[in-house]
Amino acid sequence: MLGFLLFNFSLILLSSQLTFFVLCSFVCLSMVIWALKFPLSEGVNHLSLVFGYDILGYILVFLTLWIVYLGLLSSGILFREKINFSPFIFLSLLLLLTLLVTFLTYDALMFYFSFEASLIPLLLLIVGYGAQPEKLRAGLYMLFYTMFGSLPLLLGLFFSLNFLHSLNFFYFSLCPYELPYILFFFINGAFFIKLPGYLVHLWLPKAHVEAPVFGSMILAGVMLSMGGYGMLRFIPLFLSYLILYGDLILSFFLGGGVIMSIVCLSQSDMKGLVAYSSVGHMSMFLGGVFSLSIYGYMGALVIMLAHGFTSSGLFSIVNMVYERLHTRSLLMIRGLMMLFPGLSLLWFILSVSNMAAPPFLNLLGELFLSFGIVSVSLFYMVPLGLMFFLAGCYSLYLFSISQHGKVWVFSTSPPLSVKECLILWGHIYPLLLIVLNLSLIF
Image (cartoon, rainbow, N blue to C red; front, side, top):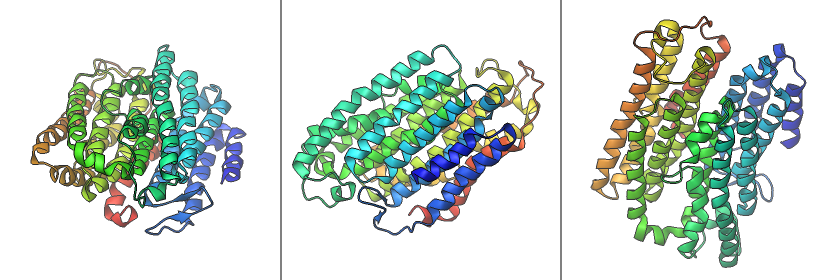
C-alpha cells in the first residue's frame, strides 16, 4: 500500500494545473476501490503480523480516504497561486500515511508512534500554510497540549505491557485482567486532549482558525476521530473502574458539552463557531462511551462518522466564502443568499445535518446516544435536551445571520464551480446514503 500511495502522489507532484483535479480524483478514489477488495467480517481481518482491521478501523479508513480526497480538491487555490504546492502534497501524503497506520494497526505501541507522528505534518501545515500571523501561537498550543498527554500515554503502555504481557488491541476485549485505575488517566488523557474533551479543548479553536482548509477538514473530520478510536480500544481494560465512577465522568462531559454549545452562540468567527460545535459533539460521543451500553457504543460510532462528514463540509463551505469575501466575521457577512444562492442551499443542508435533523446520519447517532445515556439515569435527559436544543440554535444562527439581511460586503466572484459543488455534495451524500444501508456500519 505504501508503494501504491507513493507512486500515485508522485504523479500529483509532477502534474500541471489542468491535470491536478483529475489526478486527485484518480488517486483517492482508486485507494477506496483498492480497499474494497479486502473482505469485511464480524471478527478481525488480518493483513500482517501487526496490521489488521475490524468494523471500527474499516469505517475510519474509508472516512480518512474520503476526507483527504475532498480536502485536496478544496486546496486548489494553493496550486493556482503556486504557494509551495509540492511540500504541501508531501505533508498531505505523510499525514495520510500516519492516519492509515493508526487505524490499521492492532499493536498498541505502533498505534502510539503513528498517533503522535500525525501531529508533525499537521503542525507544519498550520505553520507553513496558515493565513494569519497567529498561526505560530496556534501551532504551539496544539504542540504543547498534545505533548502533555503523550508521555503519560507511553508510560501507561509500558505499565500495561507489564500487567498484560501483550499490547494487541483485540486481546484487550478478551483479557481477564483489568489495569489499575491510575492508568486510566495516563492512557486516556492523550485521547481526551485529541478529541478534545471539555477543559482540554483550548488548542482546537486556535488550530482551526489558523489552519488552511485542508488542515481544518482533516483535523475536524479525521484527527478528532483518532482520540475516539483510541478510547474505544482501551475502554475494556477499565470496565470495573468505569462502572463505579462512570456517572461522575459522564456528568462532567455532558455539562461541558452544554457550556460549549452556549459558547458557540457567542462566536463571531464562522470557523470558531464550527470548531466549538465540534467540542460539543465530542462531548456527546464521550457520553455514549461512558454509558457502557451497546446503544451508547453504536451511537458513539455513528456520531464519530457523521461528525467527520458534517464538520469537514462546514469548514469547506466557510473557506469558499472566505475566498470570495476575504472575511469570516459574522458581523460583516450578510445576505449571501442574494450573492450565491447555490451556496446557500448547500449551506442549509449542512446546517440541518449539524443540528441532527432527519433524514441525516447525525439524527440516528444522537438517537442511539440518547437511548444509551438515558439508560444510565433519566437525569441525563436534561443536559442532552439542552445540547440538542442549543445545537439547533447555533446551526440556525450561523445560517440565518450569514444568508439573510442586507449585503454589506459585495463580491464580483463567480458562483459555485463544478468542483466546489462536487466537494460539498461529497460531504452530503454519505450522510444520506449510509442511513439507507446501515449494514455498512453495524
